[in-house]
Image (cartoon, one colour):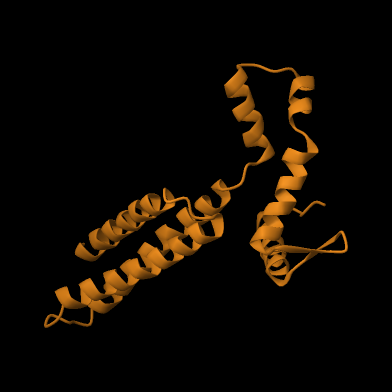
Length: 167
């Protein structure tokens, strides 16, 4: 039980530290790198604390539990990592809801006027280029290696869900 509690403690400590570091106004890419670094440091911290606390009482049964709780820590960190990286981008649905919250109510025409190509498309192209998913040469956009790998992952993920990628 102590391994489970320690892995949960390290998880919440990692999240807290990441939230504090995120307030320092790093770029998106650097914030993701900080989260990765904190995740690795948390895993290192967990592994060493459990090694020190169980030295001398090593048994066959404690090592698998120790490793399982390290896996628990990493599995808990994965959804946070995915949520954090996706929360950095404004989706069209989120922009509509923010606008409705700000104004109280809007007609369809008002929403269409607010959702300009600049807000919907150009900002996303800039984000994708900045993150290294796409490139631009001679006014033509293309997928970079990072984008190709992401699309492969998305295709597999969508096929598991029974959905198709549209576009």
